[in-house]
Length: 171
Image (cartoon, rainbow, N blue to C red; front, side):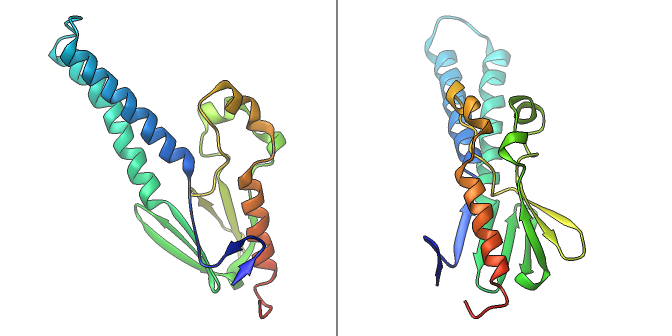
């Protein structure tokens, strides 16, 4: 079954988490290499700390990327995470939301990185955050400049809202 260009079921992951994993792993490997082969003499404690901190970040973000998944199915959605999963049928969903591109800022991304993740608003008024759906940030200045523009994630949220509006129809 398809709606637009995407077939169901569809599994969506947050690619920001994947890229933080890759970046932190590269930094950890660099510090490990620097400590082992250089004559800087960083010492055991500093050398281990410079390796362990980015390695820990890489592990945490890899686990988040692996487990934080939005699965879109014909009967509803499943929000999966490290602490469990939650299935929500289309009949309980009122709409999907994401912070508008005009309201995304570099300060928000720096101090509240979860604020631009998508949310599902249920019929009873409660809101569930979807960690798997988040605009791409990038790690270059070009990525930071593009923060305020429309992204693929905005299209995903629009697609989810179209699916939700068709939930009562025979697809």
